[in-house]
Image 1 (cartoon, rainbow, N blue to C red):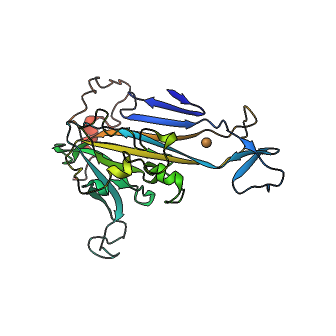
Image 2 (cartoon, rainbow, N blue to C red):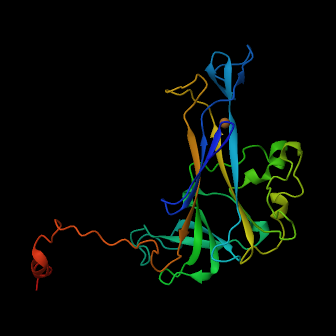
Image 3 (cartoon, rainbow, N blue to C red):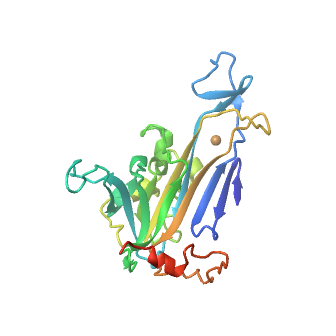
Length: 291
Ligand SMILES: [Cu+2]
């Protein structure tokens, strides 16, 4: 666990079978003062105590993932759940009108590497090994990224100073090729000197995600952005006066389509002597069918 000011980052591994990062906004406010002339209620801040302002703002967290899923050459698969296309209600393919499919799309080039989240389609991204498939599902060995909680991206206008400086925050996901000619590779999506930058740093993500360079079956780097607005509420259970309820954002990485059987399941089945067939084995067979 790591704490940065009033933010806590927790890494959970092991018992859950997947890797999970949880970022907690602890709710401890950084406050300022209202001027006597400021209207209350105020469009930009909540008054949390007389003349004390909790300003509205965003938190945007960028998680860098340098994957090696069963090997160095990986791709990113974008999946959307959509109604079965071109299949009207009453048709042979969709008589009841409730059919849906998973539409899959491999992200092919760096210029397509900046991706938006889509709640309506339960969009998900998987970092796959395109050379390995599960024997039964015929799907590629992969880690599925799960965005849990908050997926807002940067609200500031595209030409604004903050937007130009933090282009990483304008998309939920970025896929770029790793730069092996550099000691650190592509490590800093907002450039190396964020507090001093004014404009888009040359060595930053929106300049990497351009051109026709392939990101399919390549040594890639993936950046996931999680975002949350802080619109302050005064809490019912204040520990201090300037506190609001804790908010969490989470990123999960779930391994899927890896093994034929679960290599961790080597525990014998429980033998419960009190659990018996209600009609005995013969009765079960006898009552099984009507012949
Ligand atoms: Cu905040």
